[in-house]
Length: 210
Image (cartoon, rainbow, N blue to C red; front, top):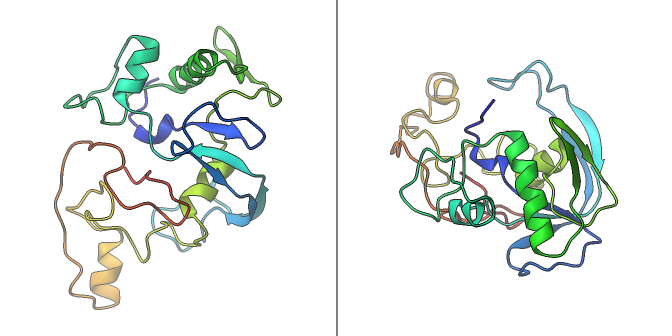
């Protein structure tokens, strides 16, 4: 099944990997312990988001999403639905597409591929020094960037902070009706993806606010 999640193709590396890529493309995320999951009262919380402490080790993470240009250069294809420019993030890829891309990039840079792929069976070689996808814990840790709320942007993002659905600011009902914040108004709805790196980085330096 395909996914339209743009952030699916974001690359990670073990912290012990000698980087072949330019240093400005990968950021060292210093590990630590954080509370993963969401509090019970958080709007739109899923049942599998029980809060618990998780510790992650140091790892490298791509500063931004993989572009359509980069994806096509290695795979020969561009599955994206939004194709107004090669600097847009690649999207409409499956998890299998993403791990295959990681292996292709690893091979192209002389690194050991992180995944052994046998049909639909994929095994992660944790000793490999090649590119991989971040784990769920690594991803949430990097996105929170030291914060404890639903976003690294507090109290909530707007269309000027991210490629957000500007017609409906996050939790607008609670802000407007419960707290009386009458200045909370909808913003611009772009209705499309935008070039990578278009917004300010989060506290960890990541430009991943799609």
